[in-house]
Structure formats: structure tokens, C-alpha cells
Length: 418
Ligand SMILES: Cc1cc2nc3c(=O)[nH]c(=O)nc-3n(C[C@H](O)[C@H](O)[C@H](O)COP(=O)(O)O)c2cc1C
Image (tube, rainbow, N blue to C red):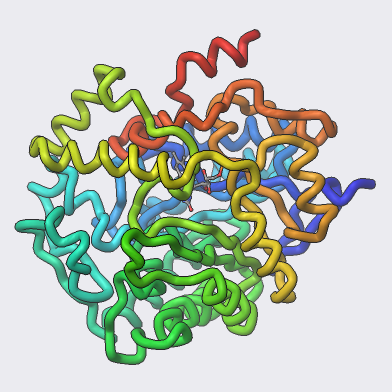
């Protein structure tokens, strides 16, 4: 039996093999058809052999999504809608973790005009906005969370995790990278607090420790709880979390009882560094998308800065196979808990090499699953490689604008049909 086919224990759950679907937003939204959308994606993945599915990020509060296609899991009733979907995925043999998060200052209520104009409360922040991003936030009310509010947020994660368990999820992953609110606490780029949630790495990460405790208390200590561990890159030498700090954070996560870590190298800004590849060209070329962007960002300079962000990230972070390897291998050598690999992992050869080299315990693939739901079966058979995904990143602006999670590259579809 190959390592890829070996089951793995994560908290109280056993995953049948070492291949997982990395969280890529499904664009399921919040409507009555959300469960059906997830079911369509996940049951197909499960039938083709994926061991674990990490569902794209869902928001713990009604405001705080980074895009309209994200689901809010802000009540028990809304969470329990997913129970039949989870039964169907389980029947097909896979386990499902729910990623939980909040976008903080990058919540769509800050930038997406239809939502900004209906905003109920201010944008939540770990600290006052860094000077570097301030020009994009003119007129946006920002609230720096008090210590009590941070503690209440940790309790909220526990409450939502308990609902997730009741619905049938097998665990959660904290969306603590990619410049989201938890990352805004972890990162010295954003966090300049001088209370117990700022300063040293252990202080900046204290919110994760409180969440881990709340999840154990509310959902049960055996409910699997995993966390993304970011190392950051920043423009102009601005403050950021180093790889050394990410390794130390993973060590703290293990000490605090997390069941697994996913180390990733990302930008301090919410750009495509997390999904290395080309700058998406469809923001202008796809008429429906261009129109959605115009409505979301009527201000030309905001649209221009979004396009510039994509272009700049593609220049700085072009696609590279298995680009997070240096970091996840270093974490794996340091911590006693399972390590999830992700980032540019494409072929069966790469998947097996990561596992056989002992560089990670579970290997994730993200974007290719949009166009190739059968990819897992080919990888598990030992000779698979994506036939369609070329990392065009055309899926990225689509999810930002609330369109379905899917492949938007026509050339990829022609190739997959070859
Ligand atoms: C459209 C899109 C949506 C994503 N959504 C999430 C998300 O909800 N949560 C998360 O942690 N990462 C998210 N990611 C990052 C992926 O999980 C993954 O780390 C990244 O795509 C690199 O893996 P890949 O090269 O196999 O695609 C997203 C990436 C893309 C392209």
C-alpha cells in the first residue's frame, strides 16, 4: 500500500487517504440552493476518491464576507441546512472540514458598493489601518476591536464549530491566512496593538489559542480543529511574518491542541500570491464580469487598483510547482501534528514525492478541481496530471464578484475535452 492510500487520524476522525480538496470558494452563497451547490462539488470529488474536502471559507457573522458568493454560517438553522449534503459526501467516503473566517478590513462591506451602501456596522480591524492601505479606505468606518470583543469572537468560533459538528462536519479549519481578520491579528503588517493581543508572536497569536479553547469547550475536544499558518511577503520591506515565525507559530499551534496545520507563503495584501499563476485577463474580456466589477467598484481608481494588484501579484509570484515546499517541509520537521501541503501541487508524481519525502502528511489540490472533478481518481491511480488547469487565475475575480466557483478559462475546457 502506498503512503497516499494510507488513512490518517485527525482529531477524532480518520481520513481514508492523503489527498484533500483545498478550500477554493464554491460561490454557493447564502440562498436555498447553497447545500445543493456544495453537494454537486463535493460528492463528485468524494466519488473520485478524495479523502478530505476542506470547504471554502464561510463567515461567522452576517457581515464580514470577502465576496458575495461566500456562505454565512451565522445561525444554527443555517448550518443545519448542510446536514443532508454532508450525509451524501460521507456516503461517498470522504470527510468534510468547514473553513471558518471573517475578512476583517477586507470585508466586502468595505469595497463592494451594493454591500457597502447597506453596511450595518463598521469594518472590524485588529489595529488602525496601516498607512500603505489607507488610500483605499477613504470614507469607510473602521472599528478596532477591543480585548473583550476579541475574546467574544473566540467564543463565537466555538459556538459556530458546535453547530458545524451538529450538522455533521468532521472538523474545522481556521481561515487564518490570506490577509483575513485572523491573519490581520497574526501579521505585524496589520497588528500594532499594545495589549495582550499585540507585540510578541505568542501575543499576536493569542486569539488562535482562545479559539482552540472555545472550540474544545463548545464542540468537544475531539472535534478536529486545524489552522492555516502564514509566512508573509511584503512590499517595500514593510513589516510581515517571517518563515521562522511561521514555523514557531506552527509549534505553538501544536502546543495549544490544534490537530493539524497548513503552512502557506502569502502576501500581506489580499492578492493572488496565495494562488500563484497568471494575472486574470477576464476582468475586461468577460463582459458579465466587467459589468459586475463596474457595479462593485463604480470608482475608476478602485477598479484600476484592483487590476494593478492582480498584475503586480502575477509578476511577483508566478506559478511554481509545489511552491510552499520549503515552508511545509520545515514545519513538518518541527511539529508532532499532521501537516497539510498546498500550493501548485499538480501531478501524481509531485503528490507522492511530498508524502514519500516526509515533507507533509496530507496533500491538497485547489484550482484544478474546478474543471476536473475526476482528477483525484487519476492521481490516486498513480499517473494523473491536470488536463485543463493552467493557473490562469480567471477563477479568482469570479469568486471575488460573487460568481459560481468554476473554471472560467475557455482554453482549459477545450484542452480537457481533448
Ligand atoms: C478562487 C479561489 C478561491 C480560494 N478560496 C480559498 C478559501 O476560501 N480559503 C482558503 O484558505 N484558501 C482559498 N484559496 C487558496 C487555495 O486553497 C489554495 O491554497 C491555492 O489555490 C493554491 O493551491 P492550488 O495551486 O492547488 O490551486 C482560494 C484560491 C482560489 C484560486
